[in-house]
Structures are given as structure tokens and as C-alpha cells.
Picture 1 (cartoon, rainbow over the protein chains, first blue to last red):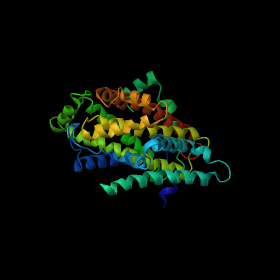
Picture 2: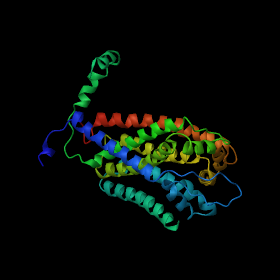
Picture 3: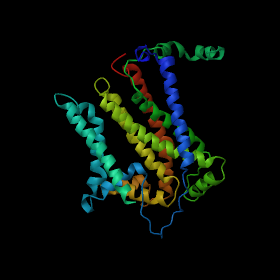
Picture 4: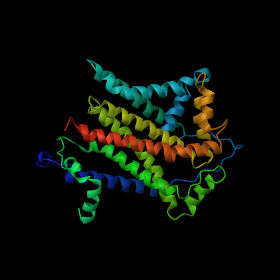
Length: 126
Length: 215
């Protein structure tokens, strides 16, 4: 590839690429919105039975809550999410010293695995 | 850039310091995976603009919120599309940020001197989730109401201060009009403004520290 060795500058080379990507994303968003438009919800009713369903990116949270009942709800609701956030923030400091990179990889891997698995699990139920 | 720009530049003096930034060389070996952060920012901008448009018609009150959404959906010209774009950009934003975070981790771009930039990115991620949570209540429909009731009740599970915290988040004992206006304020003022400040810091540090190593 000859092009790859040619020196690139932010302007105009990279800027054009960024704008092209932005344009593609804009188009994709538009296509998605027209193909799958947002539906109107139902009016709030306090008498009709209703099982709450969160936005898809909170499905993992609702799913994890199911495993902690009663006095332990606190662990699923507050402690686990707090551990996720603190671990994520601390990644640069977890990756220090000999086996740092491995520790950090395991930490990130577990967080992402939790997110993906607990998002898919409830989706299988519906 | 034409005369109009030069006239403005005399006042703001932005051209000279940015010339070096615009003409700087890029490191080799950048792939399209390095676009994911930019992709997330694109979605943020789309959310910002469609949010500005939606706020022209949305009414954050217990009595009128649902009706105003019905109006946006059925009567306002292209209202249904703007609302759809807002929702889909939110979904894409989450996906892009999660992929961007993974890319940064894989290329180990969180190492010194970029620790702080990693932390700023993580805080932005948390705020994006908070925006999703507060935005979900605004349509004031069945799904929104009960998901928020369950979501906010989680605060009460905390020992000692739990119930007080839930009261603070809801602005009362139950999810009500007070919660709606509170979430609306967070969703359209507190969170976007804080995020804009964090993103400025995020981009400024990239500019100073370079995409790969120092520039």
C-alpha cells in the first residue's frame, strides 16, 4: 500500500476522513429512525398491571437485581454498579507493575462480559 | 478563509495558535478503529441538536407531558422523525462509547500521561448512562413511569441514608410531577453542560498529549 506510507496531516487529510465518518453516522441514524420509528407509549395507569422494562442499556442492571433479594438488594443495586465504575476509573492504576496489564484485562473483560451477558439474558425471556 | 473570517480573527485571534494544531502530522498506523471516539461525539452533537428541537414542543409537566409527546408524534411537522433520531442517536452513542473504551483499552492508551483523560472518559460514560435514565422518564407514559419507579427505588436499598436519598432523587415519596421536572432539568441542563465541559477537557488533553504517544 503506497498510500499508507504517505505522511498525513490533520488538515485536510484527517479532517476529511472524520467528516466522511460523521456523514455516514448521520445517514445511518436517519435510516434507522425512518425504518424503526419510535412508538407512542401508553398513558400512565395505576390500576393496570404492568411489568416495568427499562431502556436496553439498563437491562443488565434490572437483571442483576433479580439475583439479590431482600436485605441483599443493596449489593446488586448499589455495591456492584459502584465497583464497576470504580474499577473502570482505576484501570490506569491497576495496570502498573509486572502483571498489571493482565489484571486490567481481566477487570475490563469481566465488566464487559457482565454487561453483554446480563443484557442478552433478559432479552431471551421477552 | 475570506475577509469576513479575517475580520473575526482580528478580534478573537484564533487562527495563529490553531494553525500548528491543524497542520500537525498524524502518527502512522491509525485505523478506522480510531474513529470511534469521533463517532460517539457525532452522536452527541446529533442528540444536542435534536434535543434543542424537541424542547420547543415538549412540556415538562405532569398534566401535559404525555399530551405534548402525542402532539410531537402526530401533529408537529417531522416531529416523529426528530424524536426517532434522538432516540436512535442515544442507542448509537452508548454503543460507540463502549467500543471506543474497548479500543482505548486494547491500544493501552490510558497509560501515563493519559490517566486523567481515561478518567474523564469514564465520567462521561457514567453521565451518558445518567442521561439515558433521566431521558427515559420524560415521555411520561406507562413504561417510563414504572421503570423510573423501580430504578429510583434502588436508592432506598442503601443502608442508613437510602430513604433520604430516594426522597431527594424523586423530590417526594413517589415518582410524581416533581420527579418529572427534576429529571427534565438534569436531562436538558445539568448533564449536557457537564458533559460538554468534560468533552472539552477530553479533546484538549488529546491535542496536548497526542493520539499515540506525545506529539
